[in-house]
Length: 481
Image (cartoon, rainbow, N blue to C red):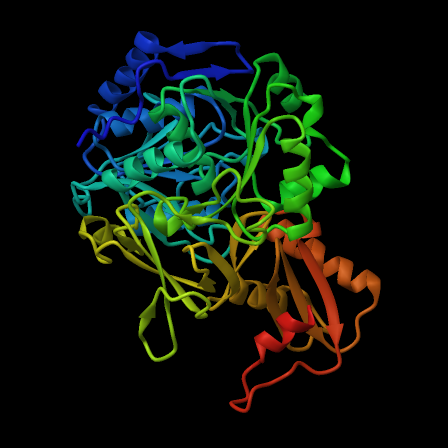
């Protein structure tokens, strides 16, 4: 099976420079990066990845050279980046100049074994022998819970990335005529899947910064005739607040949503808006651990399947694991959602040695989410098992949030409990807090995690509910939220 990621006719358009790469020019630019990689030591490449032609070419060059690459947030805290370099010992860290001037990573501490060079845009190159040889199937790595703690890497094989890209292209009917703007970060699994699924279909990717609340984004969208919009719940919540309408953008035909649960009333509202102008709204469900996306709701299923993110992508299958350990596909049975498919990750990596491991999961992913299937195999999600939340589509570790507040918020903070609530995190603080103190804690979380403060709802409570074991009853708090 071919695993070429860029089909003939695929185009990159850089809005900032006006440069267009397609056909021979795109292939030539990719080959030039692949050749430059030959000058680096063997092993994995870490890349600070903003939205730019250079960032995309580094990614495609690694793909062409069969070099595994980790796409990292260019705003990643310098100390966190240094710790990841220490643990994973990549061959090089490229793209150090990506991102804003205030987000430069500084220098590695002495003794790390790297030197500064500039073959691929400001680079740290490893000077001593690699700690481990990556597995030959390994192609892409994405960080989990990168805003707090020490993020693990999700290890994705070449086949998983390619299969997921082609599956998404099929499910969303992406063809050569489609033009997709970069409405999401490329280091985010949903964002890079938009890039992959359009390139593999021979379509166009419009490299534009700013996001969906930027006037420049929509100016570029209309100038180049973009045809689709990908968003997380926060994006659609904000678009709803400013009374945005697709009718003002006549080339828009497909709106897709993943990265968390969007309120049913907003799904219905955007469905009505886009269908009124001949388009479609398609909810989806996915996890980084499944490369990006697991399900897509087909066109024509709204409003009848409101609340469902759809059925499994081609080649994948869903089941539900009940408390007795059995797996069911019978309709209406609630349990942990299990996904099986070729796009499931090889496993996690905590250190350089893990990059050399093969497939740990055998194509089966226990998602940690609760849900059920209907009589036609459509998925409905009801909650989650894992202590993971999402803020505007970005995964955050709820335990890390609790520790951060307890350690940094100062006097007057009693026991705290963080719970997910849609596209936000609610932090319950035992005791009495005035509005100024709640705002101070929300600001602290926003600054430490580099996310907007509106993603954190700080509330006080007389006494946190407890289970008979003495542990916090998080489900009671979620119900209360």
